[in-house]
Structure formats: structure tokens, C-alpha cells
Length: 204
Image (cartoon, rainbow, N blue to C red; front, side, top):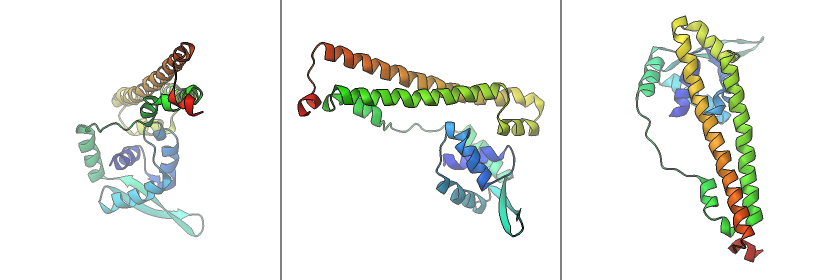
């Protein structure tokens, strides 16, 4: 149900069309919760059916129409309920750790390629998350500015601090993944230098 709650949280900033919500999911929200476009419109319809949001049909151009969604009191109550409950932790399914646990089946070069790809992925993510933190500090995030404009000034410090806290967790996670992959590369170098045989090398 996290997609539903991500949508509700976004709509607390301002009413939006489905297209506008998708833009925000492709931008800042995607850093912590990605969602395919094909899931967002059906979920909005379900949320409207369940009485959590309202939709106003307004003109779009001369002939077309669009739906502008806004959170209502029931939606705010659901968001508060979700925010206040503990989220259960789920069992891990980590394909990268699984593959790393069996690198001997791949051989040294293949294992190195996987770890270099891991570093590249998280280095790009780290850059994006750090950029987001800079934007939060400078109040350059348009949705944040809109949210702050609708809330009392006394709440602004906490609103910004909680968003920074979330992204700081992503920064720490990305750095950990980079450090882990570099440690793996060092391990491969050490094993290869000492002539440790791998099953994948024999297959090649």
C-alpha cells in the first residue's frame, strides 16, 4: 500500500493531475519510492473510489478535460494512521549478495564486472541524493516550497529536517554499497594474486 500513501503524502502539498503526480514520481519521489506510470492512474481511481481523494474535472484546452486530484479529510486521516503505525520488516531478497556469495562460479573477470557495475550504479545514485540534499537546503525543490507555503512557519524546520533525514539515509546506504563492492574487488585481487582456483575459471 506504500504507493497509495506516497500519493496521499504528495497531494498534501497541493492538488495535482495524474500527469503532475507522475512528474514528481519521476523526480524527487523516485529517489525513495519508484512506481511505474501504469500503476499510478489505476491507484488514483481506487483512492477516489475509496473516498480518500476528490477529483475535479476541469477543461484542458478547447475540447479535452483533465482530473485534478486533492486529498480530503479521510485521506489525511489515512495518511496519519499509516504514518503512526510500525512498518513490518520483510525478508530480504538481494540478488547482488546472492551472486557475490557464488562468485567462484563466474570467474575473476565476471565477478569484477559485476562489482564495477555495482559501484557505478551507486555512485550515480549517490550523486543524485547529494544533489537532492543540496536542493533541500537551498529550498530549490518546488514541491517543498509549495508545501511550506501551505503550512505554518513554525512547522517548516521539521518538514525540511525530516526530508533531509530520509535522503541522508540513502546517501549512507549508497556509500556503504560502494565500500562493499570495493572491498570485494580487493578480495578478488588478493585471491587471484595467491592463485586461488575458481570453478568459473575452469569452465572458461
